[in-house]
Length: 122
Length: 108
Image (cartoon, rainbow over all chains, first blue to last red; front, side):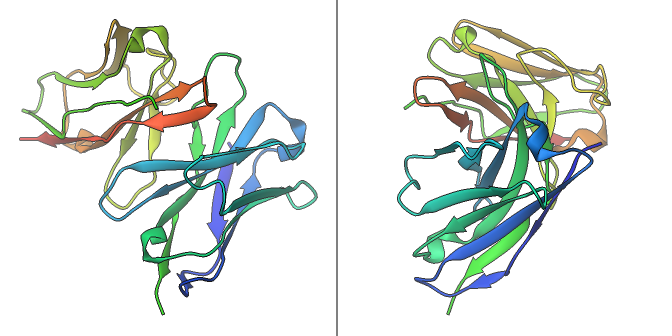
């Protein structure tokens, strides 16, 4: 059974860069067949897709965040990471990592991490 | 951008059937996926590709999709089904997964 676990600082100062890592166990990122994604949820709100990456390094980002987002992968550690620059209070949210099966016709999130709350505050 | 519309809330008595809708322009031409999120927990995939269930999801959860509306149906509702439910599609024109706003299911 695949498991994903987010890690990183729970508090980030405004204008700084939010950095999170997702560690995958029970499956290898480099085996292919899946995208690896970040999703966030503002307090009391709905889900917002941030972006995803393939093991090869190909990335796809939400246009609304694209200018500030970088997702990278480290297959040697079976991890992928999120960097979100120039954060403001509006970036305060629970951040989830998730797995996305690669299919021709659709994308969905079949396994999720437990989520980590990141608060942007001075 | 492609918009998905869900009712904010649905209420149902235990043992009854809950139906949660997800509206979108010609959504019947897309694959719809549904997630259950209980308070303080991560979302869980309960239906994918309109009507398929992941391993471990009870048969009480089913889905349908036609025209401009997709529906998640929960039969014989239990107290443990109380949660937020989100629909999701893939907007292939922009390679952008999109979520509905979520529906809070209350078990009376």
